[in-house]
Length: 411
Image (cartoon, rainbow, N blue to C red; front, side, top):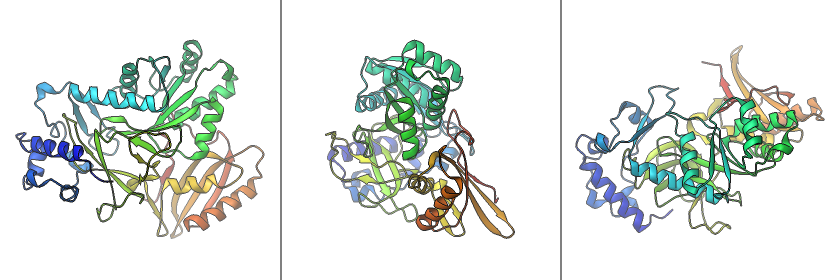
Protein backbone atom coordinates (compact mmCIF):
# COMPACT_ATOMS: atom_id res chain seq x y z
CA UNK A 1 0.00 0.00 0.00
CA UNK A 2 1.48 3.32 -1.07
CA UNK A 3 1.63 6.09 1.51
CA UNK A 4 -0.46 9.12 0.53
CA UNK A 5 0.95 12.63 0.80
CA UNK A 6 -1.69 13.48 3.40
CA UNK A 7 -0.69 10.47 5.49
CA UNK A 8 3.00 11.32 5.34
CA UNK A 9 2.27 14.92 6.32
CA UNK A 10 0.11 13.80 9.25
CA UNK A 11 2.83 11.39 10.37
CA UNK A 12 5.52 14.06 10.33
CA UNK A 13 3.30 16.40 12.36
CA UNK A 14 2.51 13.59 14.81
CA UNK A 15 6.13 12.54 15.29
CA UNK A 16 7.18 16.15 15.76
CA UNK A 17 4.51 16.62 18.43
CA UNK A 18 5.48 13.43 20.24
CA UNK A 19 9.16 14.34 20.29
CA UNK A 20 8.29 17.71 21.84
CA UNK A 21 6.09 16.27 24.61
CA UNK A 22 8.36 16.34 27.65
CA UNK A 23 8.79 13.00 29.35
CA UNK A 24 6.50 11.22 26.92
CA UNK A 25 6.80 7.61 25.83
CA UNK A 26 7.79 8.48 22.26
CA UNK A 27 10.10 11.35 23.18
CA UNK A 28 12.44 8.71 24.58
CA UNK A 29 11.69 6.05 21.97
CA UNK A 30 12.29 8.36 18.99
CA UNK A 31 15.05 10.49 20.47
CA UNK A 32 17.56 9.40 17.82
CA UNK A 33 15.27 9.97 14.82
CA UNK A 34 15.28 13.19 12.84
CA UNK A 35 11.67 14.14 12.07
CA UNK A 36 12.72 16.08 8.98
CA UNK A 37 13.96 12.86 7.40
CA UNK A 38 10.59 11.13 7.63
CA UNK A 39 9.79 12.26 4.07
CA UNK A 40 9.22 8.93 2.32
CA UNK A 41 7.53 5.62 3.00
CA UNK A 42 10.92 3.91 3.11
CA UNK A 43 12.20 6.32 5.75
CA UNK A 44 9.03 5.87 7.80
CA UNK A 45 9.61 2.12 7.77
CA UNK A 46 12.92 2.67 9.56
CA UNK A 47 11.03 3.75 12.67
CA UNK A 48 10.88 1.08 15.39
CA UNK A 49 7.79 -0.98 16.07
CA UNK A 50 5.71 -0.46 19.20
CA UNK A 51 4.71 -3.66 21.02
CA UNK A 52 2.13 -4.52 23.65
CA UNK A 53 4.76 -5.17 26.34
CA UNK A 54 5.89 -1.55 26.10
CA UNK A 55 2.35 -0.35 26.71
CA UNK A 56 2.08 -2.61 29.76
CA UNK A 57 5.38 -1.26 31.05
CA UNK A 58 3.96 2.27 30.70
CA UNK A 59 1.11 1.47 33.14
CA UNK A 60 -0.85 3.40 34.23
CA UNK A 61 -0.58 6.60 32.14
CA UNK A 62 2.95 6.57 30.77
CA UNK A 63 1.62 6.31 27.21
CA UNK A 64 -0.23 9.65 27.52
CA UNK A 65 0.88 12.24 24.95
CA UNK A 66 -1.15 15.20 26.24
CA UNK A 67 -1.35 17.02 29.58
CA UNK A 68 -3.63 15.37 32.13
CA UNK A 69 -6.11 18.25 31.90
CA UNK A 70 -6.86 17.21 28.30
CA UNK A 71 -7.67 13.58 29.16
CA UNK A 72 -11.44 13.11 29.48
CA UNK A 73 -11.72 9.29 29.52
CA UNK A 74 -9.68 6.13 29.84
CA UNK A 75 -10.27 2.65 28.49
CA UNK A 76 -8.35 -0.49 29.21
CA UNK A 77 -7.56 -3.94 27.90
CA UNK A 78 -8.87 -6.81 30.00
CA UNK A 79 -5.52 -7.53 31.62
CA UNK A 80 -6.24 -11.26 31.61
CA UNK A 81 -2.70 -12.03 30.44
CA UNK A 82 -0.91 -9.56 32.70
CA UNK A 83 -0.91 -5.87 33.59
CA UNK A 84 -3.75 -4.09 31.74
CA UNK A 85 -3.03 -1.49 29.11
CA UNK A 86 -4.54 1.90 29.95
CA UNK A 87 -5.41 4.11 26.97
CA UNK A 88 -6.27 7.79 27.61
CA UNK A 89 -8.61 9.70 25.27
CA UNK A 90 -9.07 13.39 24.60
CA UNK A 91 -12.45 14.77 23.56
CA UNK A 92 -11.19 14.93 19.97
CA UNK A 93 -10.26 11.24 20.15
CA UNK A 94 -13.77 10.37 21.28
CA UNK A 95 -15.31 12.52 18.54
CA UNK A 96 -13.05 10.95 15.89
CA UNK A 97 -13.86 7.44 17.12
CA UNK A 98 -17.60 8.15 16.97
CA UNK A 99 -17.22 9.44 13.41
CA UNK A 100 -15.36 6.30 12.32
CA UNK A 101 -18.01 4.14 13.98
CA UNK A 102 -20.74 6.10 12.21
CA UNK A 103 -19.00 5.28 8.91
CA UNK A 104 -19.12 1.59 9.89
CA UNK A 105 -22.87 1.71 10.39
CA UNK A 106 -23.33 3.58 7.12
CA UNK A 107 -21.16 0.98 5.33
CA UNK A 108 -23.72 -1.60 6.46
CA UNK A 109 -26.65 0.46 5.20
CA UNK A 110 -27.83 1.31 8.71
CA UNK A 111 -29.83 4.54 8.94
CA UNK A 112 -31.21 6.86 11.65
CA UNK A 113 -34.46 4.87 11.44
CA UNK A 114 -32.78 1.76 12.83
CA UNK A 115 -32.95 0.58 16.43
CA UNK A 116 -29.51 -0.60 17.50
CA UNK A 117 -29.40 -3.36 20.14
CA UNK A 118 -25.96 -3.37 21.83
CA UNK A 119 -24.83 -6.48 23.72
CA UNK A 120 -21.03 -6.02 24.15
CA UNK A 121 -19.77 -4.94 27.56
CA UNK A 122 -19.52 -1.43 28.95
CA UNK A 123 -17.10 0.06 31.45
CA UNK A 124 -13.35 0.00 30.86
CA UNK A 125 -13.83 -2.17 27.75
CA UNK A 126 -14.17 -0.11 24.57
CA UNK A 127 -16.90 -2.14 22.87
CA UNK A 128 -20.26 -1.15 24.33
CA UNK A 129 -19.72 2.59 24.47
CA UNK A 130 -18.08 2.58 21.03
CA UNK A 131 -21.11 0.96 19.44
CA UNK A 132 -23.33 3.42 21.31
CA UNK A 133 -21.62 6.71 20.47
CA UNK A 134 -21.37 5.82 16.78
CA UNK A 135 -25.06 4.91 16.60
CA UNK A 136 -26.06 8.06 18.46
CA UNK A 137 -24.00 10.20 16.09
CA UNK A 138 -25.82 8.56 13.20
CA UNK A 139 -29.13 9.31 14.92
CA UNK A 140 -30.31 5.77 15.65
CA UNK A 141 -32.37 4.69 18.62
CA UNK A 142 -29.87 2.94 20.90
CA UNK A 143 -30.78 0.05 23.19
CA UNK A 144 -27.67 -0.27 25.43
CA UNK A 145 -28.24 -3.73 26.89
CA UNK A 146 -24.69 -4.86 27.57
CA UNK A 147 -23.90 -8.56 27.95
CA UNK A 148 -25.87 -11.34 29.62
CA UNK A 149 -29.45 -11.87 30.78
CA UNK A 150 -30.59 -13.56 27.60
CA UNK A 151 -34.25 -13.58 28.72
CA UNK A 152 -34.25 -9.79 28.96
CA UNK A 153 -32.29 -9.42 25.71
CA UNK A 154 -34.93 -11.34 23.77
CA UNK A 155 -37.83 -9.55 25.50
CA UNK A 156 -36.34 -6.15 24.62
CA UNK A 157 -35.78 -7.27 21.03
CA UNK A 158 -39.45 -8.20 20.82
CA UNK A 159 -40.90 -5.18 22.63
CA UNK A 160 -38.60 -2.48 21.22
CA UNK A 161 -38.43 -4.04 17.74
CA UNK A 162 -34.62 -3.92 17.52
CA UNK A 163 -33.46 -3.92 13.89
CA UNK A 164 -29.65 -4.13 14.35
CA UNK A 165 -27.81 -6.53 16.65
CA UNK A 166 -24.30 -5.58 17.79
CA UNK A 167 -22.53 -8.57 19.31
CA UNK A 168 -19.67 -11.01 19.41
CA UNK A 169 -20.21 -13.94 17.08
CA UNK A 170 -20.42 -16.30 20.08
CA UNK A 171 -23.27 -14.38 21.70
CA UNK A 172 -25.04 -13.85 18.39
CA UNK A 173 -25.07 -17.63 17.95
CA UNK A 174 -26.35 -18.15 21.49
CA UNK A 175 -29.16 -15.65 20.90
CA UNK A 176 -30.02 -17.22 17.54
CA UNK A 177 -30.27 -20.67 19.12
CA UNK A 178 -32.39 -19.38 22.01
CA UNK A 179 -34.76 -17.51 19.69
CA UNK A 180 -35.17 -20.67 17.62
CA UNK A 181 -35.64 -22.84 20.71
CA UNK A 182 -38.35 -20.53 22.10
CA UNK A 183 -40.17 -20.28 18.80
CA UNK A 184 -40.23 -16.48 18.83
CA UNK A 185 -38.46 -15.78 15.54
CA UNK A 186 -41.66 -14.27 14.12
CA UNK A 187 -41.57 -11.68 16.93
CA UNK A 188 -38.01 -10.59 16.18
CA UNK A 189 -37.48 -7.64 13.81
CA UNK A 190 -33.71 -7.85 13.32
CA UNK A 191 -32.46 -7.03 9.83
CA UNK A 192 -28.70 -6.67 10.29
CA UNK A 193 -25.97 -7.89 12.61
CA UNK A 194 -22.69 -6.08 13.30
CA UNK A 195 -20.30 -8.68 14.64
CA UNK A 196 -16.84 -8.20 16.10
CA UNK A 197 -14.30 -9.02 18.81
CA UNK A 198 -13.38 -12.53 17.62
CA UNK A 199 -12.81 -14.30 14.33
CA UNK A 200 -15.60 -16.53 13.08
CA UNK A 201 -15.87 -18.99 10.23
CA UNK A 202 -18.22 -19.18 7.25
CA UNK A 203 -20.35 -21.94 8.77
CA UNK A 204 -20.94 -19.90 11.90
CA UNK A 205 -21.78 -16.89 9.76
CA UNK A 206 -24.33 -18.85 7.73
CA UNK A 207 -25.92 -20.29 10.87
CA UNK A 208 -26.35 -16.91 12.55
CA UNK A 209 -27.59 -15.25 9.37
CA UNK A 210 -30.04 -18.06 8.65
CA UNK A 211 -31.42 -18.50 12.17
CA UNK A 212 -31.79 -14.77 12.83
CA UNK A 213 -32.74 -13.85 9.27
CA UNK A 214 -30.20 -11.02 9.07
CA UNK A 215 -27.41 -9.61 6.91
CA UNK A 216 -24.09 -9.86 8.77
CA UNK A 217 -21.18 -7.42 8.79
CA UNK A 218 -17.69 -7.77 10.28
CA UNK A 219 -16.42 -4.88 12.38
CA UNK A 220 -12.77 -4.55 13.38
CA UNK A 221 -10.88 -2.79 16.12
CA UNK A 222 -8.74 -3.10 19.22
CA UNK A 223 -8.58 -1.22 22.49
CA UNK A 224 -5.14 0.21 21.80
CA UNK A 225 -6.36 1.79 18.53
CA UNK A 226 -9.56 3.57 19.65
CA UNK A 227 -11.58 0.32 19.92
CA UNK A 228 -14.00 -1.35 17.50
CA UNK A 229 -15.00 0.78 14.55
CA UNK A 230 -11.72 1.25 12.67
CA UNK A 231 -12.77 -1.17 9.91
CA UNK A 232 -15.99 -2.62 8.51
CA UNK A 233 -17.09 -5.04 5.83
CA UNK A 234 -19.52 -3.97 3.13
CA UNK A 235 -22.41 -5.82 1.47
CA UNK A 236 -20.00 -7.53 -0.95
CA UNK A 237 -18.33 -9.50 1.91
CA UNK A 238 -14.84 -9.13 0.46
CA UNK A 239 -12.76 -7.92 3.37
CA UNK A 240 -13.09 -4.90 5.66
CA UNK A 241 -12.68 -1.28 4.63
CA UNK A 242 -10.54 0.78 7.00
CA UNK A 243 -10.37 4.53 7.46
CA UNK A 244 -7.02 5.50 6.01
CA UNK A 245 -7.49 9.19 6.81
CA UNK A 246 -7.17 8.24 10.48
CA UNK A 247 -4.95 5.16 10.28
CA UNK A 248 -1.99 3.84 8.32
CA UNK A 249 -1.86 0.07 7.86
CA UNK A 250 1.17 -2.10 7.06
CA UNK A 251 1.50 -5.88 6.73
CA UNK A 252 4.78 -7.35 7.94
CA UNK A 253 6.43 -10.73 8.13
CA UNK A 254 5.93 -11.51 11.84
CA UNK A 255 9.35 -13.18 12.07
CA UNK A 256 11.54 -10.69 10.22
CA UNK A 257 9.54 -7.46 10.52
CA UNK A 258 9.89 -6.88 6.77
CA UNK A 259 7.00 -5.03 5.12
CA UNK A 260 5.16 -7.35 2.73
CA UNK A 261 3.58 -6.46 -0.63
CA UNK A 262 -0.20 -6.02 -0.92
CA UNK A 263 -1.94 -9.37 -1.12
CA UNK A 264 0.51 -11.28 1.08
CA UNK A 265 -0.63 -12.51 4.49
CA UNK A 266 1.25 -11.27 7.52
CA UNK A 267 0.88 -9.35 10.78
CA UNK A 268 -1.10 -6.11 10.74
CA UNK A 269 0.81 -3.03 11.99
CA UNK A 270 -1.15 0.17 12.66
CA UNK A 271 -0.09 3.79 13.02
CA UNK A 272 -2.62 6.35 14.25
CA UNK A 273 -2.54 9.56 12.22
CA UNK A 274 -4.70 11.86 14.34
CA UNK A 275 -4.96 10.32 17.80
CA UNK A 276 -4.06 12.74 20.58
CA UNK A 277 -4.30 11.01 23.97
CA UNK A 278 -2.30 7.88 23.15
CA UNK A 279 -1.08 7.86 19.55
CA UNK A 280 0.76 4.75 18.45
CA UNK A 281 3.46 4.42 15.81
CA UNK A 282 3.90 1.10 14.00
CA UNK A 283 1.95 -0.86 16.61
CA UNK A 284 2.13 -4.64 16.16
CA UNK A 285 -1.41 -5.96 16.55
CA UNK A 286 -0.60 -9.71 16.26
CA UNK A 287 -3.60 -9.98 13.90
CA UNK A 288 -2.95 -11.95 10.71
CA UNK A 289 -4.47 -10.60 7.51
CA UNK A 290 -3.51 -9.04 4.17
CA UNK A 291 -4.17 -5.81 2.33
CA UNK A 292 -6.55 -6.55 -0.53
CA UNK A 293 -5.31 -4.83 -3.71
CA UNK A 294 -7.65 -3.09 -6.13
CA UNK A 295 -11.02 -1.38 -5.82
CA UNK A 296 -14.06 -2.84 -4.12
CA UNK A 297 -17.25 -3.43 -6.10
CA UNK A 298 -19.14 -1.33 -3.53
CA UNK A 299 -17.36 1.78 -4.83
CA UNK A 300 -15.92 2.88 -1.49
CA UNK A 301 -12.70 4.88 -1.70
CA UNK A 302 -11.39 3.29 1.48
CA UNK A 303 -8.88 0.41 1.18
CA UNK A 304 -9.48 -3.08 2.56
CA UNK A 305 -7.89 -5.74 4.68
CA UNK A 306 -9.02 -9.34 4.47
CA UNK A 307 -11.02 -11.13 7.14
CA UNK A 308 -8.62 -12.06 9.94
CA UNK A 309 -7.23 -15.58 9.75
CA UNK A 310 -6.03 -15.57 13.34
CA UNK A 311 -3.35 -14.07 15.56
CA UNK A 312 0.34 -14.76 15.81
CA UNK A 313 -0.17 -15.49 19.51
CA UNK A 314 -3.12 -17.84 18.78
CA UNK A 315 -0.86 -20.25 16.94
CA UNK A 316 -0.15 -23.61 18.52
CA UNK A 317 2.53 -26.05 17.42
CA UNK A 318 1.68 -29.75 17.50
CA UNK A 319 4.27 -32.31 16.33
CA UNK A 320 6.16 -29.50 14.60
CA UNK A 321 3.08 -28.25 12.68
CA UNK A 322 1.94 -24.63 13.15
CA UNK A 323 -1.85 -24.46 13.50
CA UNK A 324 -4.09 -21.38 13.45
CA UNK A 325 -7.85 -21.27 14.21
CA UNK A 326 -8.52 -20.20 10.62
CA UNK A 327 -7.06 -23.46 9.31
CA UNK A 328 -9.37 -25.47 11.56
CA UNK A 329 -12.38 -23.51 10.32
CA UNK A 330 -11.29 -24.07 6.72
CA UNK A 331 -11.25 -27.83 7.32
CA UNK A 332 -14.68 -27.91 8.96
CA UNK A 333 -16.15 -25.67 6.26
CA UNK A 334 -15.27 -28.27 3.65
CA UNK A 335 -16.84 -31.28 5.36
CA UNK A 336 -20.53 -32.10 4.91
CA UNK A 337 -22.49 -32.76 8.08
CA UNK A 338 -20.36 -30.48 10.28
CA UNK A 339 -21.83 -27.43 12.03
CA UNK A 340 -19.96 -24.28 13.05
CA UNK A 341 -18.81 -24.90 16.64
CA UNK A 342 -15.58 -26.64 17.57
CA UNK A 343 -13.15 -27.06 20.45
CA UNK A 344 -9.55 -28.30 20.46
CA UNK A 345 -7.82 -30.16 23.28
CA UNK A 346 -4.05 -30.69 23.03
CA UNK A 347 -2.49 -33.14 25.48
CA UNK A 348 0.87 -34.83 25.95
CA UNK A 349 0.32 -38.52 26.69
CA UNK A 350 2.79 -41.40 26.71
CA UNK A 351 5.54 -39.23 25.31
CA UNK A 352 3.66 -37.74 22.37
CA UNK A 353 1.33 -34.85 21.54
CA UNK A 354 -2.31 -35.66 20.84
CA UNK A 355 -4.75 -33.15 19.33
CA UNK A 356 -8.44 -33.92 19.78
CA UNK A 357 -10.85 -31.89 17.65
CA UNK A 358 -14.41 -31.78 18.99
CA UNK A 359 -16.99 -30.46 16.53
CA UNK A 360 -20.76 -30.28 16.38
CA UNK A 361 -22.54 -32.31 13.72
CA UNK A 362 -25.84 -31.80 11.97
CA UNK A 363 -28.75 -33.98 13.17
CA UNK A 364 -28.88 -36.32 10.15
CA UNK A 365 -25.12 -36.75 9.78
CA UNK A 366 -23.58 -40.21 10.06
CA UNK A 367 -21.14 -39.70 12.94
CA UNK A 368 -18.42 -42.18 11.96
CA UNK A 369 -18.40 -41.02 8.35
CA UNK A 370 -18.12 -37.37 9.34
CA UNK A 371 -15.32 -38.09 11.83
CA UNK A 372 -13.37 -40.00 9.18
CA UNK A 373 -13.86 -37.18 6.68
CA UNK A 374 -12.68 -34.54 9.17
CA UNK A 375 -9.61 -36.61 10.05
CA UNK A 376 -8.68 -37.12 6.40
CA UNK A 377 -9.23 -33.50 5.34
CA UNK A 378 -7.28 -32.21 8.36
CA UNK A 379 -4.35 -34.48 7.50
CA UNK A 380 -4.42 -33.38 3.85
CA UNK A 381 -4.82 -29.64 4.43
CA UNK A 382 -2.92 -29.07 7.67
CA UNK A 383 -0.52 -32.01 7.68
CA UNK A 384 -1.39 -33.44 11.09
CA UNK A 385 -3.21 -36.55 12.27
CA UNK A 386 -5.86 -35.74 14.87
CA UNK A 387 -8.47 -37.52 16.98
CA UNK A 388 -11.88 -36.38 15.61
CA UNK A 389 -14.84 -36.33 18.00
CA UNK A 390 -18.26 -35.39 16.65
CA UNK A 391 -20.90 -34.24 19.17
CA UNK A 392 -24.51 -33.07 18.90
CA UNK A 393 -25.37 -29.41 18.28
CA UNK A 394 -25.45 -27.55 21.59
CA UNK A 395 -22.99 -29.80 23.43
CA UNK A 396 -20.02 -27.45 23.12
CA UNK A 397 -20.02 -24.35 25.35
CA UNK A 398 -21.57 -21.05 24.33
CA UNK A 399 -20.36 -17.70 25.60
CA UNK A 400 -21.80 -14.22 26.15
CA UNK A 401 -18.38 -12.81 25.27
CA UNK A 402 -15.59 -14.54 23.36
CA UNK A 403 -15.53 -18.32 23.12
CA UNK A 404 -12.23 -20.01 23.99
CA UNK A 405 -11.75 -22.78 21.46
CA UNK A 406 -8.18 -24.05 21.87
CA UNK A 407 -6.98 -25.57 25.13
CA UNK A 408 -3.33 -26.54 25.31
CA UNK A 409 -2.93 -28.83 28.31
CA UNK A 410 0.72 -29.70 27.70
CA UNK A 411 2.24 -27.04 29.96
